[in-house]
Length: 298
Image (cartoon, rainbow, N blue to C red):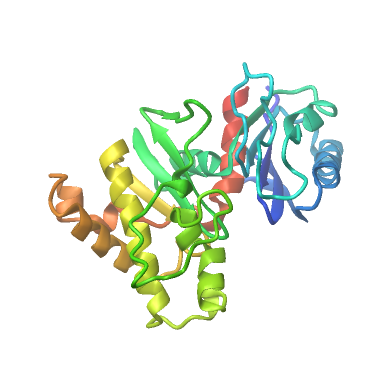
């Protein structure tokens, strides 16, 4: 029996990460590329996989967990395309088509955060759960939902980073950075928003800087809303901002305060630390999630 080998692509707005393997402990090759134009970036991706096929043999499938918005519906005429996006040059890019021009194998395509959710379900802190959310708070904000054993899509796919929040402009006069909505969740709480509001990168701010109390408030508002609407068994919080160690306890406490006993579950009332957690796979959830997408495609 021939061992299956999977390709995974974590396509981000800043960088692409490509890997070949079968799981967290069996990655045979990995590479990172700066995200430039679609044509240039995807050419590097194709070259990487072609080289790995020379080294290890034909891939069984490729999973592509990509930044969006995108069209993940295989029955749609724009399946595999990036939809209108702030990333210059990427609107309407047919990224799956570029892969199919070079590889005659199954290609699974989904959002980067849905991919990360699948990775956490397969090997991380989503294991054994039927319903949970993976949220990334970093340069941007996005969320993937795993519902009754499947990744949630719908009309297109969840856009958890663009929910409206309560914005007290007397306490936070910052207008927000989202080009579509201004002061939505991403507009107020993303890494870009932190830097523009405080004129400094978040990783240079001290633990007692007022930025973190504000950040915890906005993230907790969003998490309480997701808790009401999707009733997840767990919320996994990743990304460069979401994984800041001293931020997690503030988010846990504030989310519990905002829910205020309405959700009568012991995990929220008594054990909030196991309800809102950081990823089990660390910053590799997305890349390993792409491998998990490929695994499901065959």
